[in-house]
Length: 146
Image 1 (cartoon, helix red, strand yellow):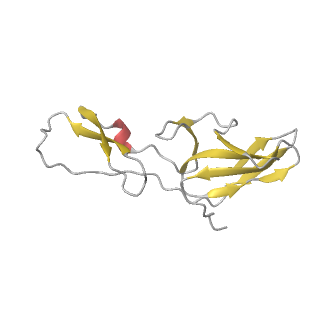
Image 2: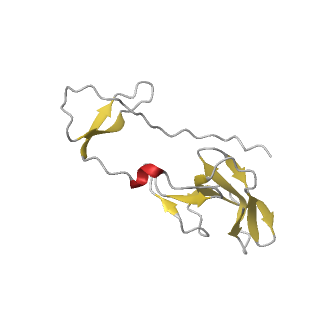
Image 3: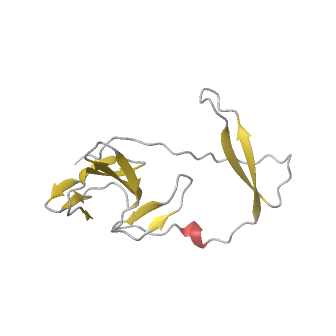
């Protein structure tokens, strides 16, 4: 799959795909930037574009050439659904009613507290022992091997 980003005025000195898996550099090709995602080891990818200006400043934006978006804790991302992608079966599963609680946890070593959201099934009582799934975002600057 070939991604394209139009830059007819040459406003940018670099364009990068930023995701939780890797940072990949686009290549200048005339009035646009291109990135070949052949060999990508995933079938679905949430990403942003990092646009670097001549002054060295950069901004992150959703891909204007891709209307597919996903919401997230750190803002909306562009989404690529590549060959072989199938929606997870749990999306069609019956939903379990529940409630959320907002808590604050001490952020030891961070210099600030951390906002935490906990979801529990409606039938659960406060003293019930329940499994806990913890999710966080990890960013990497590694590239995929060719």
